[in-house]
Length: 357
Image 1: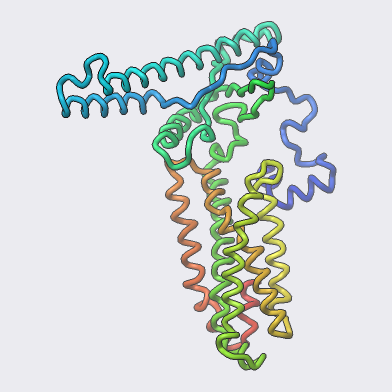
Image 2 (image 1 turned 180 degrees about the horizontal axis):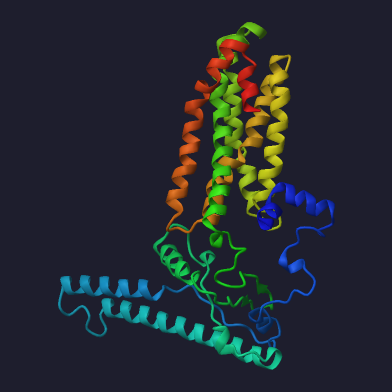
């Protein structure tokens, strides 16, 4: 529960007010020590860590070999003979796989040799090896799916993850272990469900905020003495704004020092604050400006909602989470007029905007 509060906007505000003395991260607690795998790399003799190339996994290579052999046997019985293109392709893939295995063995040997003189820990007990990351594969590909399946098995065991040290001595920070609780994909089902539910509700509110205004158009026409075309502008500008917002919020959320949580917190706060003057505005020009700003600051759910789901769920289970998120997005515009229709009829055109707040 402390971790959940710390990651929430309220927890971040508490950390800022107290100078990070409350709700600390594990690395900020006095006496924290890096795992032995990081010490093994940091205290190395200065040698360059082996470069981990992006080669096909064993499963994928075997599949390719099987497909190649099948296609070769269908074409002619001599296509797998030495010197033929089919045999050369299979031999090349076998060499790539052997080279990948040699790189992994070299990494294990390097980490073990670097660890012994500094930490005096049994290296075999650490099971040092490089765990392939999702970032080393292209999203939504067969290779990514295979890596996700391998990582799903790895998370059932506690195995240290060996970080990679680049040629210029920079250590690429990774999770400490395969079941690191800080990894969103290792969160419990209840925590992931709660975060997913908040994202879906947020998405529903922003999307329903567009069509919820349609019940007020007749009241706006009568109040400001404008044409029906002009009365539709608050709806059009809102939709235009939350279509433009992702051009800014999506790239910002990918910057590590910013992340997704601050984007959600700041823009949702501004969206809520703007909803108050929007419901109280006294002129049509102000209504147009405020509706545009509402859509712009509400757009992060469209920009990074699906990305947040991908952060928490592997490619094996991501479709189920996306079904819930997309359903919330589709139900918003459909149910918006239904939610405001009864209130506008009884209380006036402003009540459709009050319901957003």
